Image (cartoon, rainbow, N blue to C red):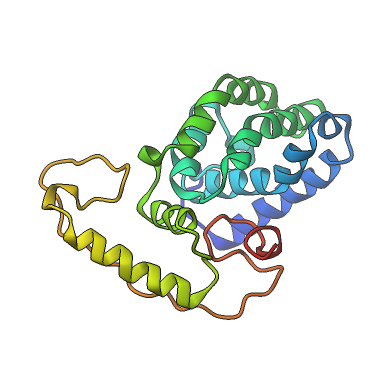
Length: 221
């Protein structure tokens, strides 16, 4: 486990994960995936590598089954504001990626990781698409999407925030937590969300909706 988080080390990890991914994309393992899984593959592998380090402190050589399960069922489900296609693709994509890395000698524990992610495939989809497992930010973004709001549109998001705060403050105290989050002890006072600053978004920049994808492959389509 990394002793201390480092932006420099994260960049090195992401570069290595990406380079491995490019070779994997030309292998038979990648070709066995269906079109939807291939479409999600870069985002799945990149977000897994990033969150395993950023939230769990592990470099690729340190990835293990227990932390993989925690990351897939808790961290990614709670943080990544993605549709079901992302979570449905996660197990087959990661299994294929891990198997390739094991077969090419890059990840000695790759076969074990592949077996583990296949074993929890159903739970990954269930947790990622169930509001009970979402964090506050994801709940807000997914709620905006469900209401037909474009997360990249400043006026629409500000209007939605006003409606969200008004609805939140009108609830009984016991119901003021975001949907899906369990009530633990006395409920905290409501924390109205502040309007976000929205700037012009480049098509190759991260999408502001929180999905983790490039804008051109998400809300900018």
